[in-house]
Length: 440
Image 1 (cartoon, rainbow, N blue to C red):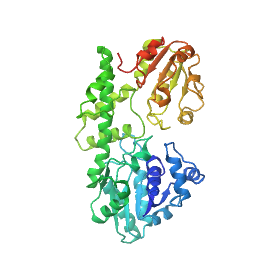
Image 2: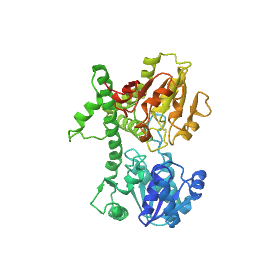
Image 3: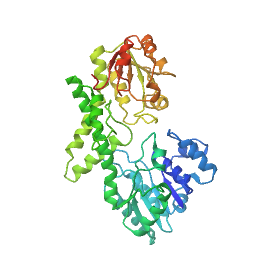
């Protein structure tokens, strides 16, 4: 099948590469010439495990191509995936300008039947706007070309996006005509040979399903974070509580880890967008408003612990940060707790030496040449003479350190663990002060 993917970000590039991997002929469009140049030179503009190798393999096989030509992209694929960004607008609602621009371009250039698939995360009702935008462009050209609009939200985890696409737990398709449903079933058949995973529903339900999924996961995270703060006050241990409730099959184990808040490109934006949607529908979601407020508070918890230990004035203090990305296996720092922590420590006069396996280049872009922030090539190097180690991202390479070596390098023997990656007795046995999130 010939497929066009509009956008080469996390969703677009992963989708395009994975669809090519199973034998489709895929053309990826992006108006950012630098992104296309990087792809044509054999690189990728994002970090995602396994993606570079898949892109190279399918380019070499002649199944994956890149372009900046809108007309070429529209002419190429019967299925046109829109996988562009939907950044938060000033009021927190999703900005649809890139989605609708893509739809208008399709309507402006299409000459035969197209299935236009919203892969971007979009508010309920966007399918209607996409359909109207295409219709307006066709009317302006004075032509009548058939097309279908489909909602096919992605459920990809950054850091595991390739695996999620190749082995999905569900494929949601919002469509309202038989031809589009038939094509989408054919497109996804290679990804569900083991058993049926495709759920067909109306477009608005599919659009809401994506927001509902992310909102539910964000709710679990914020609930556990609030429980962790309560556990600290009561002298309980949130890790033991997690085990006690996670063993209940009605609750399960996923997304029950307390930490220093969620971030990334999805949860914060989607929670805000769903809140705005609910307010516009005059059906406010009070629980979700609390989820967002709890998460913003949680991003300050590590700074509160630092201030409690070292005082409000941190001038002359330097802290080692392990982790900058919002989660492991990505270089994404959008809405990352590390950004709040760095800013708050700077306000109090502190300096920071940071280490992250892949996100330091992104941190340099965000913070520029601020002399208060330096970077270490190795995690242990960040500790030399630091007043404390602050763990912000739970990279695997941090899980089993030499605690005696950590203590020897720190000026003050303090670890503040924002991801609870250590059992408290291990660093304490090495003579380190250890403070986690909700740990006894």
